[in-house]
Amino acid sequence: MALNVYVNVIKQGRHVLVACCDSDLLGKTLKEGKISFEVRSNFYGGRLVYIEEAIELLKKATTANLVGSTIVNNAIREGLVHPRAVMTISNVPHAQIIRF
Image (cartoon, rainbow, N blue to C red; front, side, top):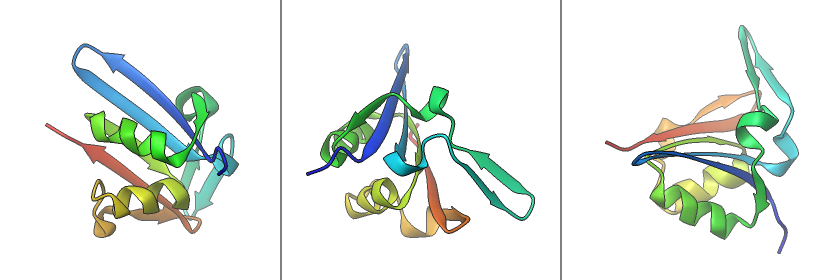
């Protein structure tokens, strides 16, 4: 089993932000039309973890940003993201989770 996603957890009071991206996307810029989306290491590049750990962290998040087919597809499979809530940029899935 490979370490395949980066996870950065930012806590502020009761708010927990989880930024997560597939390992091969860290530091890349996705471009499509007028959209230029940077997968910045200072935001997404926390720890390199197994997908199972990333999913457990997402379950505790109040807000999450996800980039990449591995993390987004697993979040959909776990019921954390609705498939219709996913957008793609340069054929790379991106999703956000917001819990009130």
